[in-house]
Image (cartoon, rainbow, N blue to C red):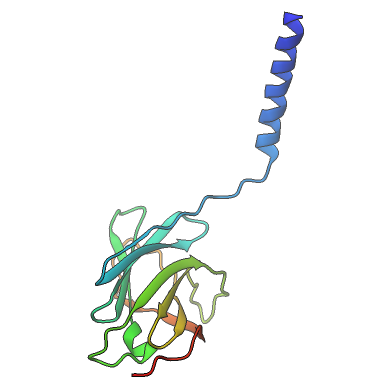
Length: 164
């Protein structure tokens, strides 16, 4: 009886290992974020096939979104990105905008020789009642390259604009 149990345990282990080897693997994607009353910081995926991510900061006081990608080989920030989010949302100079930020994944086609990153940045602004989707090009460089302006994909309204 003890021998049969050992045999079944061995068969179960072998079957479990065989199934786990043949089962399709899905990569784990994690992003992180944090915020204060003056800024938000978050990460997003840059390229699905290479484990790279970008880190972005949205300064609530200036409405400027900046980011950079840490190169896996050199260990240096080699690509920088920027965008004037306040201008995109039409925020007036003395206004106090209220932003919310998340990142996500997209699969956009390459255009004009530019490969877009697989990460996107979504920003909502309360006074305008809009959400904007931003993208940026995937640039894998070991040497620093000049900062690149992020592109805006689209807007949608989640409520009517606030009246002042």
